[in-house]
Length: 110
Image (cartoon, rainbow, N blue to C red; front, side, top):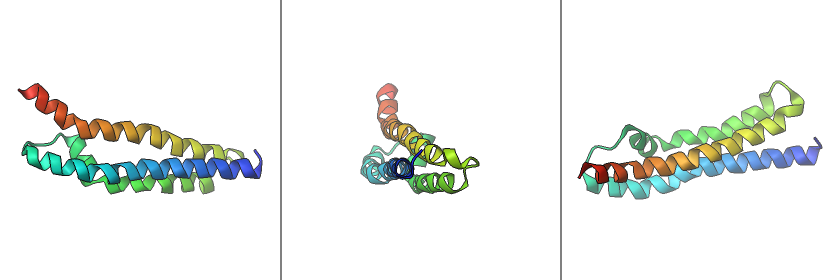
């Protein structure tokens, strides 16, 4: 892999991880107000996303750690990119599901 493509892979991984970390921080406060108006107990997953969404900022740190500490130097850029993209692919749908879980649960309760 050339130096330019390695830097692009790192940039893609970092941008994906930052996006994955920012999404819960940006969207959960809006849902928190709605959840408080429900007055019902929230599912555990929703509580985790609402109250502990700062933990997702470890994802960009994980990408950087992979860049510096991956055992095979030739695969570091690929590993950093894949970790970042995988975090985006996993965290975004999980955030959406966690935020709408109480809505679906309240619909089933009636």
